[in-house]
Amino acid sequence: MPGDTQAPGARATTRPAEARVRKVAIPSAIGDLEGVYEFVEGTPPRALAVVCHPHPLFAGTMHNKVVFRTAEAFQQAGFATLRFNFRSVGASPGTHDDGHGEQEDARAAISWLVAQHPGVPLALAGFSFGGSVALNAGPGDERVRLIWAVAPGVGRRDFSHLALSDKPKGVVQGTVDELCPLADLEQAFPSWADPKAKYLIEGADHFFNGRLREMQAALHTFLEAPEAASFRAAVEARSA
Image 1 (tube, rainbow, N blue to C red):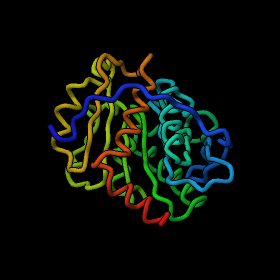
Image 2: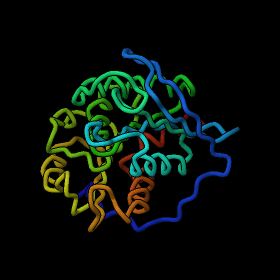
Image 3: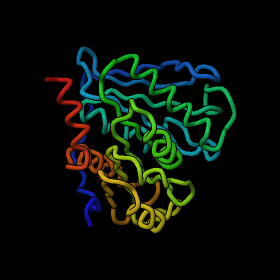
Image 4: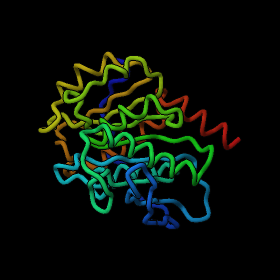
């Protein structure tokens, strides 16, 4: 069916030699959130990406391997990226808020990154719990031009609003995900409004053990897919 794609094979991945990593403090309503900003020295980014991490109550942090590799894949496509710790995680203050306050945290991260690069198109992404935050916070935020969710666990949250969102939406999931059943995604995905794309990695588990390169390749494919055309147009319009 349209928007339903078998994930591509692994691609060779390298980070730019001039890539830089900077720890940052992100102002928010509850205090400064801990973040990691990655960019290429001396080169304006083509686009921006904020990447959200998995569940804080189950050891999720911005240093999770899937979050790190997702940010890396965006960097390979010319994006500057921001990973950050939700409230109550690491050096970020506050208490866990079951996804509600965490949406505010994501918006604070977006504000910080947009301030560094005004006018540059931005994607909001996340893994697992972070994917659900992206799917909830992204549609209503005019600064977000594309949403990318990695194994978001759609059976645990209400995503009915995605039926009304015309922003590009991409999702990747392993077929043997033990924490976020593929069946939940298969049931919910048809109701999401276009443009949308779904990528399945045969035999991959929730954490994409041994399959992270394929997970990255799915993002690269989505960024070049027809479903992401409006995002590419925004990028190209700015660089024209």
